[in-house]
Image: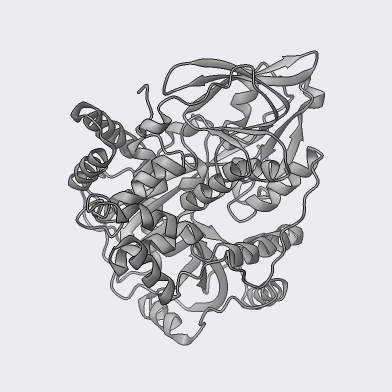
Length: 549
């Protein structure tokens, strides 16, 4: 694929011999957040991603924004405090993408966690979180949950508040736009062949544009390796020798099921068949169950859920809800990602700290290079500020303040009506745009007014429209059909999505962008191939699994 689908971006400006103050390698939520902070601090910044922004660990997470109730067990008070502060900032600054969510902690009588310890932990968690999030913590959802629980086991159910980011891909897209508006240069589908080292100092990178095959050299004062589970690989290909691996990859697998009868609207935090904590979460009109924790040293880009992990998650769900009759055949899809936890071979994955840290490579013969290890969705903003400060940049910490005119409440019906009018689209289509684009919603909606073609739904099951896909190519650096349908306008993650939906969307988007028939077929084939590698949809047929006692 040698050209960009948007003719206006067919040839990306050359980078050869350009000099930047900071080059950030890795376009997940941490890398994009770091690039955003550096650009806002007035530094010339280049952000490079080997595949697409948010295509790695970010899009394979459990999609919750939480303070880390579990971290209290390990006495990591600082991590909890930081996470709660960042959770509050995200809720206030990005309410269209980050929503308060009621959580129900369900523990049976055999749990090693005592009710007294849990109550004490929840009291401390609420105290540290300051004001409530406005979630209605009435009995209705708790009653729903209790009606599904195994009646033969005694359960204690506790309610608390946290938050969810259903589509962190959209948060990354929004931060990417903010980084570019601040002056950052962004390149996805661009591989870093090596970090160049001269006289014990990192001086730049060698790049290969995957779309054109072109190779370039770019210089920088600082290099930030924010590639998550690929961090050690970047060092290896650059001949940077470190005493021990920095990352101990841990695979986390999830299954996505249809909503079942009586499913609570609250998230359920409980224990799996082996006592590990797992979540059962309402997500994208479906139910998300996860996650596992399995050491994984394989290629993070090829990670797949193992058959025993899928069984483990199903068995854990059925042990909790024996009335729910599901089998592998009911799974919409399963997916897995690799958490870039600090290398700790002597520890159980559950006990490894989720706190991020910055590895300075000066002692490794690569001064002016930093690798980011660990981190999570919730604390990407604070990690970025910490990294920028390490580079010597002066920053103003974000304030949790009263709502400003830039903050959009997606629940305001008047706002939805205004967007519908701006784009000449239905209220449902407008609501979908408001929920995914926030303050950029008017721009996206105005793109629909020009023609009926732009107002057409991406497929017959979706309210999201072709104008959103065109905007993704024009303003959010999407380069392929997969970039759009999996990350910028992630309708392909819905339970209804099928091969016919893919063909329909490819045709409608291709017509709007003027693709040739051959180009459309190539894009569709590449999209289906990426989907097959990311969303596992084929499972052996079998009888409904029986819950374990």
